Amino acid sequence: MTETRPEDERPTRVAKTTMTSFEIVEALSERESAGVSELAREVGLAKGTVHKHLSTLHRLNYVVKDGDSYRLGLRFLGLGVGVRKRLPIYRRARGHLEHLAEATGEVANLMVPEHGYGAYVRTVSADKGYEPPFHEGERVHLHATAGGKAILAYLSADDRERVMETRGLPPLTENTITDRSALGTELQSIRDRRAAYDREEHTEGWRCVAAPITDPTDAAIGAVSICGSTERMTRRRTDADIPGIIGSAASSIENKLFSR
Amino acid sequence: MTETRPEDERPTRVAKTTMTSFEIVEALSERESAGVSELAREVGLAKGTVHKHLSTLHRLNYVVKDGDSYRLGLRFLGLGVGVRKRLPIYRRARGHLEHLAEATGEVANLMVPEHGYGAYVRTVSADKGYEPPFHEGERVHLHATAGGKAILAYLSADDRERVMETRGLPPLTENTITDRSALGTELQSIRDRRAAYDREEHTEGWRCVAAPITDPTDAAIGAVSICGSTERMTRRRTDADIPGIIGSAASSIENKLFSR
DNA sequence: ACGTTCGTTCACGCTCCGTGAACAAGGTTT
DNA sequence: AAACCTTGTTCACGGAGCGTGAACGAACGT
Image (cartoon, rainbow over all chains, first blue to last red; front, side):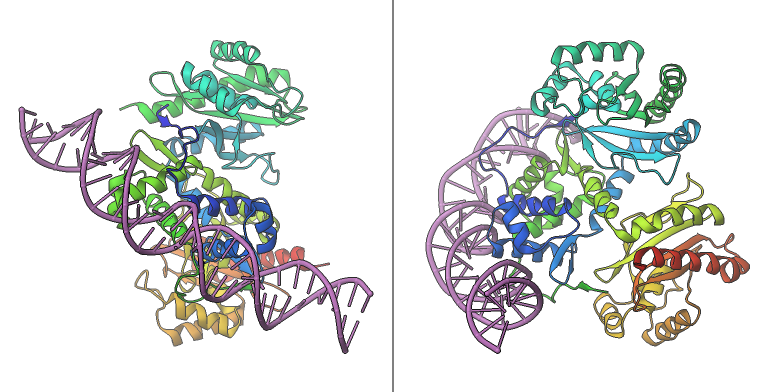
């Protein structure tokens, strides 16, 4: 993968004001809405300062103001959807995800690596009323999901090393693989079958199967996965049926991206 | 509507650095990717300055760096989808939109007013391969779409006045209503039937029908709309069939939001 | 081999960010 | 009612840090 990573903790080659603005944005993103004082306590700045930042974000239309409380606005959705729309891998995978969700009756996802995490680009649920335990745009640790492990398995050795180093292997459930060498053998077996499994390693009661999407050098650029509740994801389906269809979807996406 | 608006052009109660950061973000959002020099020319700042902002955004993981070129990352999608997920009107309308798209075979949308524009919260297409001429999170002028006009018709008189004042009535096609008084009578007829029409006023070859979603005081909080190409949107459907089903969807959403 | 353009870095000067206090408005407690 | 919170907003001031312009090496195109 060609992505360049942020240098580790440089002193001050950054715009500090911008950092605090985004700190406030992120604090806001964790709640429905909030007032100036609450946010000031949260980020540890003077009320006046936070007020100035919020006014700025409001003026720019990134924040909505309801009387005395502030919340994030939908402009972020516009930015994010625009970003996705321009991603070649998304454009090529879109149709396949609809088909995969339909064919399996479960949830189909496209994930890409970004900044050492896995980012869900698109998730399609066969049952439109159901909401999976994650959402589009969310970032997850690569070692704890099927798609993430598929990506990790097909990264270069030092990219992989660096991800494990900087992001760590935190446990999310009691099944999460947190041991470096155990993960190493798991990744090898993923390469052997070109399929990755998540056996309740991210969320209890939740299982996934994934196939990597690679470039012509066999380096990961993403992954497609099918997820469902433990009861419905029987051995027969996860081991025989699903790997086949996601594998062919993955290679079809690769062809569209790289042929000609 | 309770939304408070940005005060008109105050001197300097804002964080200027944050404004330039977002200027850069917005310049980036208009292209697939870009380099430092190109962006510096675009926003009219020194290369060094732009580089510092990009480094900051990269460090915060909002921008991805591929070698020497920068592009927006998927974190914006995460923020945006999170914002939407918390919107009560979205949660209540979600199921209805799926149903409406299915029942009509066209595109169903939810729009809400924000900062004097209409923001598409969710769009569901019956034909999953088809992409409508707008995307989720996008903002449009209220006077030029069915959903927007439905919202405009059910705003308080001075909110409506202020929107027309600050956002104007720019022509988007040759059918766009750009005359204040013509728009006034159009809005009255919308109130008469509780349904709004877009007859290629936003995009040529594209027609919509919308119904307002109002609070108990009959003020607009959003709108549902059905859109399709001119050929398929026959008179019979737009005048008889569609208004009925979107009207009942709208009142069902209102009930879920406000009863008890 | 030259010229151009690129991204990145740095010292400096002046802008402007962050602070803390003060204010009015609205709520709650006494 | 009166005293006491807490809220959002404003402001003058001092010092941090933003923006500039120049300089650097690297990568291309000529």
